[in-house]
Amino acid sequence: MLNPSSLPQQFLAVKDEDEEFIWVGEPMFWPFLFTGIPFLVIGLIWGAIDYFGFIQHLGKPENSPPPGFIIPFFALHLFPFWGSILNMFRLILVHKNTFYAITNKRLMLRSGFWGIDFSALDYDKITDIQVTVNPLENMLGVGSIHISTGKTTSKGSPLADHFIAVSNPYEVFKKIKTVMVNIKTDWNYPNKFRPEDNPGYNTKYEPKK
Image 1 (cartoon, rainbow, N blue to C red):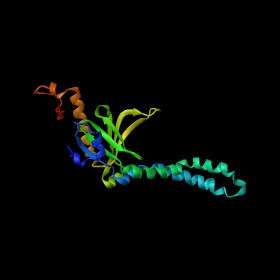
Image 2: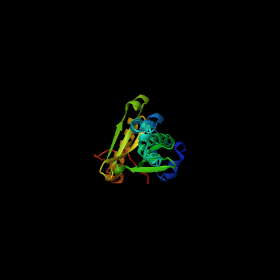
Image 3: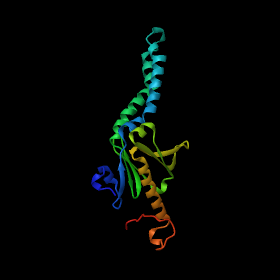
Image 4: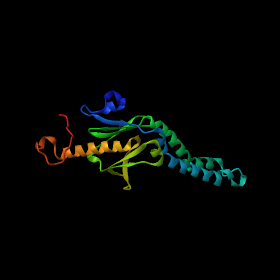
């Protein structure tokens, strides 16, 4: 278990009295920022099409609509362009507030742009976890863990929570799986009901009273 003095103060604010932290990590900066690149590329392409296809021709009198129309129109139409740039600045600010944790009760995600937000994933709600390592993460020795809890969008598409660009992703994955299996097993067959000679699953989870 981790020493409480090594934990981010904000985690201590939401920690249960009998909760113990097994692992705490944070995303590496460049791979975390890289998650905004696909949106940025789309935004830059969109902006180039608007500029070379329309805006640069507006200087000709016969092609110039009234300013009262053209300015608000392109301010809205260029949203993918300036929105993608603002998103990169948002990721820079979010990174310094982002931490992940594994405890003996749940997974915790700390993040936030203007303030600090927390989300918790109870082990019994987790339906699937996966590890992915993209080329940039592979070069830097990090990876991302995707955690599914069965949540979906309004259109039915699956939603997942993510530990993005964490060091030693396979070790973190194994820690989550170990605690998850132990706890789910204990809920199904609590330690106090196991005989001394138990042929079933040999869990090491020992909840404190």
